Amino acid sequence: MTTHYHAPIQIQTASGSSAGTSILVIYTGGTIGMDYDPTGSFLIPFDFEQILKKLPELLRFDLNLTVLSFLEPIDSSDMTPQHWLSLAKIIGDFYDDYDGFVILHGTDTMAYSASALSFLLENLAKPVIFTGSQLPIARPRTDARENFISALEIAATQEDGKPLIPEVCIFFDNLLLRANRTRKVQSHIFTAFKSGNYPPLAITGVTIDYQTHVILPIPQKSLIVHQTLNEDIFTVRLFPGMNLNYLASIIEMPRLQGIVLESYGSGNVPTDDQFLDILQYAIEKDIIIYNVSQCNGGAVQQNLYGAGQRLNEIGVIEGADSTPEAALTKLMFITALETDLDKRKNLLYKSLRGEITSK
Ligand code: ASP
Image 1 (cartoon, helix red, strand yellow):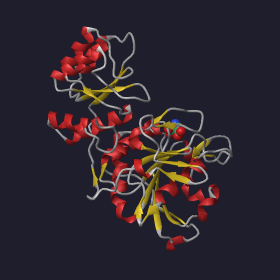
Image 2 (cartoon, helix red, strand yellow):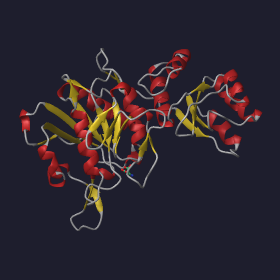
Image 3 (spheres, protein in one colour):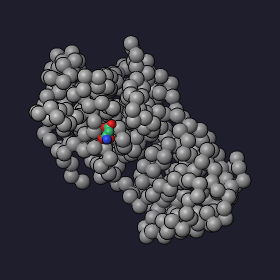
Image 4 (cartoon, helix red, strand yellow):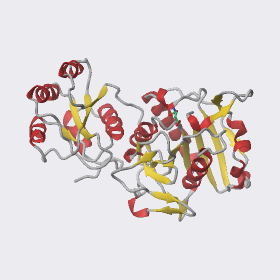
């Protein structure tokens, strides 16, 4: 697919081209990149050529910084799987030229994009750090400065000449979180993201404290950049009183290959036969039903309650402690990768990038 971005901008930091570490920043849009228009009355996407005026602190970094901006910066509500493929391709194209990558992205769908990238980039050995902000970079109290600068520092951190974080992550406020374990949980306070089922990979304060025991090992194989995602996937979030006729008509949609079922608590669903019959009918049509919880912490355990037994019998797949964002993007990824139903199911039960706790 074609990628649409401006020509790369080199940022001259203190050490300029003599610096040892080089970072590629990809600016996609979102609140972080907002600045006031020349009349000072409304916010427009910020021109990255001006970054040093906004963040003179960058001058003190011992880094080679290059910025690639999307031709049209977007609100992350407009992100699509095509943008995720584009981001993965950019990282693949520039992988050998940089030690780490920072992606500036709107917060609203960051957890989806970052989860998708974690699946698309197989055998990733370098940091890919998503960040953004709750307040525009132009506002005096902005969190953009802190988030961007810490994300750069994390992306540049190495130990014995090797990157410390060979993972796709979200850095926000003071937490470095594994991307595919993370959800946006706040639109107001600065701690916008949470990883309910996995500890932070690092916590920033006076120092950056890396929790090395929870970081994935550096893979031995070379990077594979996947370039397909299946969009014939849907999410159904259970709620009391759901009109089952609507659910039944979704199942009839041509080409539908999988549904993320956002169930209650530890994977619970109504015991109503009509509901379970619809799921069974879907599974008989080779539609994968992938059960994850609406809760922000805990795991799906289908053998805990009565209705769960029936889910096991009809072949609903337990999503373990997956976030709904990771479940959706994983389903898009594995159904594009594999056509064989059993292979698809095996991949769902496996942790591919640390996204679930395997039994
Ligand atoms: N609507 C914005 C976005 O997601 C919000 C943000 O960046 O925080 O692009």
